[in-house]
Image (cartoon, rainbow, N blue to C red):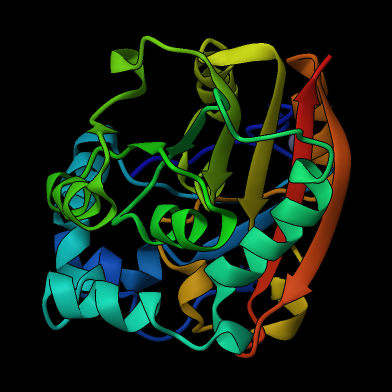
Length: 270
Ligand SMILES: [Zn+2]
């Protein structure tokens, strides 16, 4: 258990904005009945960044992500994948992402020949499979550290999924980073790494939960569980991206049927 200051500006001036209630199933994987020790979300009084403190130690984080699939892929890997992949378009978050991406990022492309796609943090491959189906993308690569999820994605999508970003040797035209940044302890280090697999004209599609969750969701919502350690608002995320010479082209926040929010951004290298 580690108490932390604001990741964005290092300030220790903070205001408590939420105390989680209820059981945190991911925390239970590694610490039984210790929810009350890990239930605090703060807003930085200097920059507005929202973060949890305390956080897990590195070995605890590793253990949690090694076991992550056991909570996600229920009742078994195949039926989990098939159930979400076959959701009606109207309620499929992945389908809606494809529509928005197509409208805003693919409209001026002459053809898909020689255009390359990769999803970093591809989980069990549900977005990759949806993108292949609805965007007519022939090949999309993935990166996913969890072994069971990586294997499932390879099987279902029929593609190569790398274990680590450092294994990827090519550069890509489109890089998807969906629901990843809010899990990562050092997003600046991560952004530096993904820049290495980008080209001058690469478009990135980022997605994170929006801070409006703190208004719309109850204190026991799974959004506030231990795998999520940060909430980016427009100001903090735009300024971090700017440090890496990345510029936001367009963005939107959407609210799903179950009131969860998604802040989505298309970003270019400048
Ligand atoms: Zn701050």
